[in-house]
Length: 430
Ligand SMILES: Cc1cc2nc3c(=O)[nH]c(=O)nc-3n(C[C@H](O)[C@H](O)[C@H](O)COP(=O)(O)O)c2cc1C
Ligand code: SF4
Picture 1 (tube, helix red, strand yellow):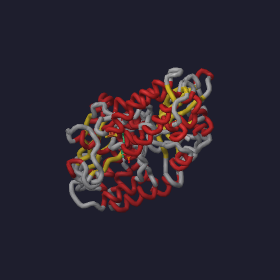
Picture 2 (spheres, rainbow, N blue to C red):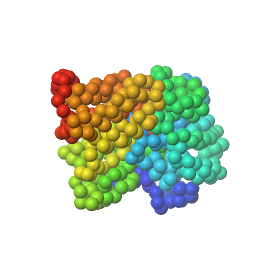
Picture 3 (cartoon, protein in one colour):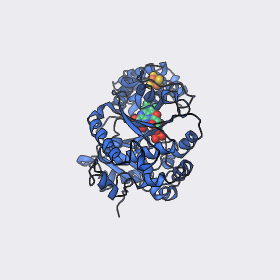
Picture 4 (cartoon, rainbow, N blue to C red):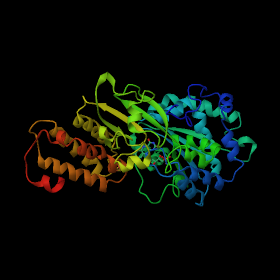
């Protein structure tokens, strides 16, 4: 029996992305029809029962977010689909946009109907600009077929979708920076509260959801929230798209049921990663994106679910699984991660803007025999703690997660080149 599941990926590679009739033959737009026979509150109840956790990385329960927005006064309410996908090692939203865009549009139309939204925006990663024209032409086809645009399915409800191109900034994936960028402002995060559900796009109540989250909605409605939940983990229903990258043999996108497979299955099973290339050994894996935790081969038997990974000090995040073999220096790898954050820090706050740069200097010294002292390690610890606690947004708060988790697993590599310095180290690191 296959270890994989196809809820979001159903029809991928078999149904042409723009073929509306073929999409309908595999059940496409049935969920929209069903939704439009239900009340918005009933739809929200199904999403809540499914226990779908936001697939953009923060894992916030979708049902709770939708219920909150439903009760907020003010019109129009906007739908914003986060297709920024700037996370290195993550390419699952691109898979949805390329292979099954009609499922995403159906999910957006259902969300639009729930909140009576006249307009939805897709904020598309700048580097995915080749997809924009194609997506626009599929939207036009769906409009002609009555599934988007004016009077959807003959009802009084109408929805326009606009695609906004990002310009290649990772911070614009953060939901409030994304709204600023959509409004034509500099893409920097907003202070919260007020929450975006209350004061969002153009100051109006707004729903921001990830591509994969919205593409999961049709199947939730078709199966029913309870059945969708049962296909996954009791705390988080359904499936997750995994972006498998790095040194495993079979890199790519896999849709897996949550709570059924272990990390070992994902990396080594012949149906998934197929093991490490060139007969080398696994050294570590990096989960959930650059801001996620580094895992050690000792953790391979951890079940891939939000709950189990969290208990092991790991996280699902964006669904990235970057696999690294024994030839990789952990410090060199962390330096590359840190350089990404230096590049992508928006510069608004000191802990992130300066902290990342100071960390870079220490990582540099740790790589040179005799160049770093134990005081450097103590300073590194303090920088990590300060950035985590004092950065303005999620980027700075999580930029050092990879370093602090790798430090636990590879202490000897961190200390290999260090010479004795003042006693601060003992106080800070223990
Ligand atoms: C620095 C940063 C970058 C982010 N990038 C993305 C992104 O590319 N795509 C995404 O969906 N969410 C991203 N997020 C999370 C969003 O802020 C937000 O939680 C998400 O779009 C909500 O959708 P969901 O609940 O469906 O996951 C990012 C967050 C931070 C702090
Ligand atoms: S944490 Fe970094 S990305 Fe976020 S506001 Fe501060 S400088 Fe900008």
